[in-house]
Structure formats: C-alpha cells, structure tokens
Length: 523
Image (cartoon, rainbow, N blue to C red; front, side, top):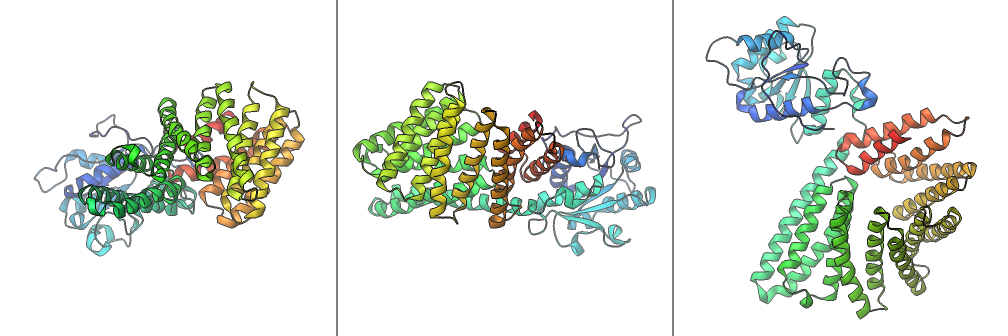
C-alpha cells in the first residue's frame, strides 16, 4: 500500500547525512518516472506485523531515505563527487530500466561503481518501459539476471512492482507483504475505473446527442436512463467492492448533471424522478462515509420530498413504497449518527411500516423480507441507546433474524441475504452482552463464525467481503475472550490484524478499513 506522500526534496549527502536505504539510478530522460518511484518508495510504510522483520528502516515502518540525483549530471566523463558519495552510503541500488537507461553512460557507471564498492549488496531492476533485452543496461546483466520488478501495465503494474522492490530492500518475504488477492484487487480497481471512464464518456455523448437531436430524444433518453441505472446498480456495487469512493462520487455527479441538462424536473417521467432520488441516496451515502453529515442530510431530505410525492401519486406501487422507505431510513440514520434518538425513531418507525406494507403485498418476496430484517435490525440498534432497553432491542433483533432467515430459505444461494443473516446474529450477540448474557453471546458469535466459513467456501476465502465478515466476528470475539479466561484473545487479535493488513495492502485510504484498525486499537 502507498503511505501518505511526503514532500519531494533534493538530497545532497554530506558528512552528517548518514546512509541511504537505496540509490535510484536512472536516465534523466526518465526523470518523471524516477521521481514517482522515489516518492512512493520513501512514503511507503510496511504493515505493522512486518516491521519487526525489516532489516533496518524507521520505527514507523518507512524504509528510510533514498538518493535520487535531481539535477543533470555535469558534462564530464566521470560521476560527480556527490553521486559517488551517495553510492558509497547506499544499502542497495535500484535501476530504473528503459531503453533510455540502457543507452545511458551514467547509469552504466553508477552500476559499475556500486558493484565495485558493494559486491555483496542487492541490485534491483525496475522495468519501466520496453522489453528486458531492450531496457536492461549491459552492466546490470553481467553478473546474471537481476532481481526485477516489472512496473509496466502489462507486467506487475506499479503496485505489485513497488511491493517487490520494498520486499527486496526491507528483506521481508514477498508473500507476507502481498497476500494472494492483493494483485487481483488492484487489477479489479483499475478495470472498474476503466469501465467508469467509458461509462462517463458514453453518458456525456448520449446527453449531448439527446440535446442536439430532438427528433431522436426519446430513444436517446431510454439509452441514457439505462446507463444511469447501470451506474446505480452493477457499477456502484463493483466500485464499493474495491473501495473506490472517489470514483463513485464522480459517477453520481455525472448522473445528476444529466438530469440538470434535462431541464424542468416536472417534465421527467415518474421512473426518471425515482431514479434521480436514488442517485441522491447514493450521493448522500458517500457524503456520510466521509463524515459530511450536513451534506448527506441535505441530499437525503431532497430525495425524501421527491419519493414522498411519488408515493402519494401511486400509494399501492411497491417500487414507490420501497424507494420512499430508503429515504426514511437514510434520514433516520443521519439522526442516529447525531445522537438524535427521537428523530431517529420517527423515521425508522416509518421505514419499518413501509416494509411491512411490502410484506403485506407479497410475504414470500425475499427482497421485501430482507428489507423488513433491516428495518427491525435498525430498531434493535436504536433500543441499545438510552432511548430504549436491551430487552426491547432483543425483541427487534429476533424479528430481524426471523425475517432474513425466511429470505435466505427462499433463495439460499443469494450471498447478499446470507451476509445480512450473518450480521443479524452479530447484533443479537451484542444485545446479549448488554443483557449480561456473555455465554449466549459467545454461542451466537460461534454460530456466526461458522456461517462466515460457509460464506468463504462460496466466494473464496481471500475475497474482500469474506475478510470483512471475518473481522465483524473477530473484533467482538476479542472483547468476549477477554472476559473468558479459557479463550485466547491474543490469537484472535493476531488474526484480526492480519485481516486488516490484507485489506490495507489493497487500498490504504479506504475509510471503512481504517475504522477496523481503529476498532482493534480500542479492544
């Protein structure tokens, strides 16, 4: 994972400069790439579990200083004294390989001098451009094929390539630094981002065309609305799966721009107005994830006005009931985060009543049953505050489990419903803790743990969802184990930290995963 970037600066070694963790050798035609590599290497932090294994480095997990000569070398036939000094003080050599580097006299001299000064120290090749035979300097291959990281998109890519260099410098096992799904997750982020780019371009093109070609407006509107629906469903789910909140925001804003360009909202079809409300829900959800509660409430309130009007127009339409139920939930959730229990109760009771209307229309519909489970679960959560009691919470939690269990029985292969059922058991366990029933809470958490194992067989144990579900069980188990002398809380903590590190290696800026790390600190 990339740590927070530190300001770039020239490093000129002197008598008090100390040693460099590595010297970055590159052709000055590749200066931009060298600067990027230098910044990422210096700002990278090893996961906490690996810091004790690192050879050298800083206490916070950073590798230490790297030397990168930023100025053009003098027009002489020899290396400058500052470069020679830096090579003498460097623990390793990183060669940024490209056709430019292969043809560079200075790169060859730096390799030769480093090998002469430190025959036992590592030289790592970072392939940035071209094929190895066209990019590796001859001086680099004299002693055999060097340890290489392929930074090219068609190779390891920057993320995995960087981790290979870090592992080589820090002398830690690569497989401990990069869990098996790290590369897959990274490529997933890149592929989803590419899909977003194509979708946004298509969205823009369709909008422009619809405005310019009035005679084909109806057809184009249907096409554009279909794309908006894709953005709200499949694409959003993929982006959530790889933690790309920034890209989700861009998608939502572009979709809202589409509706702004459509003009007067009263001219929009009912389905378009409902879809716009769902975009507002999504945008508010993203604001809430960033802790911008005022912005989130503004969007949820605007959506609530729209969905309320749509429901009043078609009170028996299940789609209108469902969408307005989401508005009630989100306004209640913001109130819950603001500790406004009365306002939370008003909106969450409305949410529950709307889901019960859906059940009356079809009591076997798994989607409606799952929604009722959410509504009862929310009231369970609310009762755990000073607003209610643990016994009242237990009643709502039990109803939530019963509703979601029925949904699961109807479609046992549905992973989303199975995840919801796993979470419902967790909430009931929390209620049991509040009731002083630690033994029962432990039993429910063990049931939950078994369900997560079953889930891992379905989707793969290295799947991000699996890891998150494991953490939702492990974190409360740690707390329970500390009051049960026969349980090993330290082993549970080790497992939890390992899971968090796997997620952080995929994206160290994901706010949800940062919260898991903070939760572990408090246990």
